[in-house]
Image (cartoon, rainbow, N blue to C red; front, top):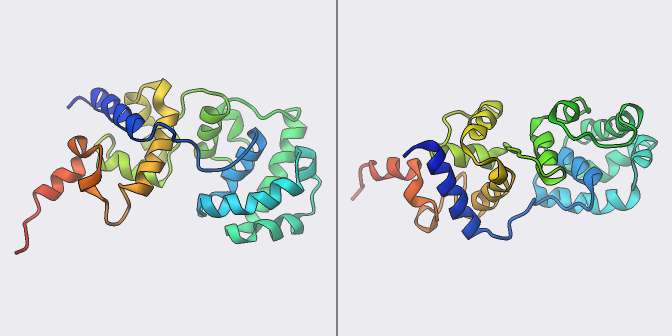
Length: 217
């Protein structure tokens, strides 16, 4: 099946399966989403959402973070892992936003990735969820599902992003990545994927490889 057509069919199937899908990280504005995404590196969204309840109540503005006691930030986010690096990045990120961007979060991947601790995954999430622009958020679910489905053949995040940009309708790209997360958690798990329950079974290359495996009596 031609890849662009296949991608459109996958988009439609996941839209029908997860009409209410959204970002799993809880936030009320762009700054909170930026910080929550930085905390999510090598940490579950569930844990981040627990931690940010205290963090967002304690610090409300860029100025609050830029002038914060680093030890206090570390204490609050400790359970997220890599807490020293994350605390340093959050404070430095907000200081740079105030110094170079006038306290405004920039609306381009190029400028966002100049911020401490912000890579393309975070930048793309901001572009899609905050600025409403086409974006491909490449996380472990996106990599796993897009490879199993046969949309890409790489585990390199940047190569996956570029490949998906070529075939996924731009207006659907950001929400497709959120739906990949929802589907990856519920059905297409890293271990023991629930293929018999999958709404994408008819489009999945991974299932075809299972069909070819010898059956054990």
